[in-house]
Length: 468
Image 1 (tube, rainbow, N blue to C red):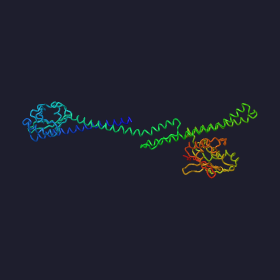
Image 2 (image 1 turned 120 degrees about the horizontal axis):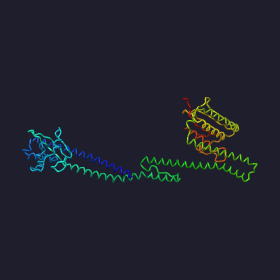
Image 3 (image 1 turned 90 degrees about the horizontal axis):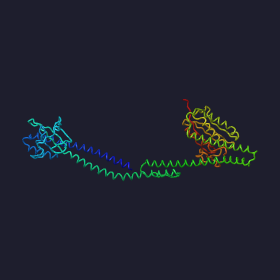
Image 4 (image 1 turned 120 degrees about the vertical axis):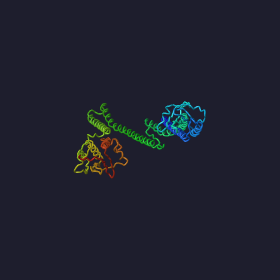
């Protein structure tokens, strides 16, 4: 508010100064026209009457007095040397008679027969005056100068009056502007203060705070309030996911750690006989390997999220070949569950530009997930098609129980399992699909899932590679 008031005050001062300068220039121009016109008029009168100051001074003084009164200027007639011969005072014994004007003033007369001085010191008047000189030659060839002047102090008087008006205007504007600015700024600052208070609460962990929207006429502040609420909502969701992540990690780590601790304590205190210890050591080793896989998976996801897929790791390869190789690695599991495999892959192959290892992991995780949840004797489907947008669409499907509609948006979340029993799937951590989504999004591609009519299908896109 102080800055705004200072800017208004400074603007008014600059405007007042500019107005004073322009007013002074305008006043001086008007006075120049006035005294020049008076001098010219007096010269015209003398030329018309043919009056010689040395012969009929009284008549000339009367005529000069009339013209001076009409114009408000003082006019005198001088001879060639600058000595005053007649004055507009109209008095025979005028104190100005006999005064000699400065030679530099008379010599300033130009080719047009006139001269003007805005601030000429004239001793006969005892002050500086706005002065105009007109050159005149009598019929007898004598040179005469007509000098018309007005007090320069009149300019200062007019400027003083204008300054007083400017000061009054500045004070009036400031008296009106300060309360108005205070009201506007207070109103505009209200949502900012609310956001500041809300930010402090959020810093102390209160993620449910929101600010009112549309409480001011400023569209920018309303947009800021809306953006703040969206940010607060996003932070609240992020905090909720963080808490869920910590809870899930704690839950997933608790089971193997409890198993390892229990068996180790049993072997140390002799509860487990020595001859059975190798068996339980195998169990402990398996749990340690599971923990190691979890850590590696989490580190891989973190790396991909932070660094993305480097361009140097992307190269051209055949997706159909990758799908076929991954499918062969599941031959034993597929035969063990007597699954029927349906493939729809183009014979000519499908070349793409991506990270081959990352895409192999995506296909592996999706097929592993499909085989795991496909019932005995069910059908496993693999399909690759070309979309209208010039991309490849890879789909992995399986028959069996469908995923509930309310679970579909969460299947790609970390540690999410459709089976709420955390120990039901001892080989899974709920990270497989999360890793798949992270890899695909790092390639700037899309992945989605559908589950209806007894068929669950995961599909993702890949760019089509064209030889340069």
